[in-house]
Length: 245
Ligand SMILES: C[S@@+](CC[C@H](N)C(=O)[O-])C[C@H]1O[C@@H](n2cnc3c(N)ncnc32)[C@H](O)[C@@H]1O
Image (cartoon, rainbow, N blue to C red; front, top):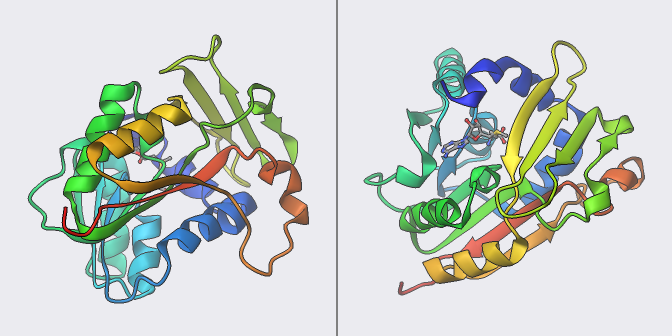
């Protein structure tokens, strides 16, 4: 059973917390830009929360992939309740092929599931393979650049994040999020050094791979999130499949 099968409801509830809506979302949407008329592949789509938002923002084609059948069940139920034309499949994101090229690949918390360089590379290859030349990869991720002292409890944000010591490639990062109602949502990510991300994405053929500092929406007051945003636990990621590749 995939880890998320057991926590699908708790995870969905955690997406309503303010740091999700006021930091995670603006960081991701800032990278994605205007999606009207664009085809988007959502790797590690979870329950499809971002797939639905992008369909509502005018994406021309949306397909979501997740390892967890529990998460995909939730996504399909939402699609059945309010059809937007989104399709879903249960698969390892690293194995996605045959869907045709997409203008955008979105990866919201996928790469932090890579337990070593080889797995990160297979995921990056899949993102590249599924983009049209000139297409972009955008996502949010556990921030691998975090200082050791910042793996801690964030009391104002119902959020705990710890890393296994000694910190090395594949170290477990435990996230525990307490939604406003219901059970806490607890899951593990894995740490890969930032320089390994940069090297792997370049080896695969991506250009302009970069980590992007998380932020609030343009014009919004960042003060309520200042403790969260400083050396932030999450970051954006962005890269491009070059034209002519
Ligand atoms: C933190 S959730 C993010 C879900 C969604 N992107 C969001 O932002 O709400 C991580 C998701 O990654 C999925 N996942 C983990 N490893 C995966 C893999 N190798 N291939 C596809 N999905 C994976 C999990 O099942 C889970 O749904």
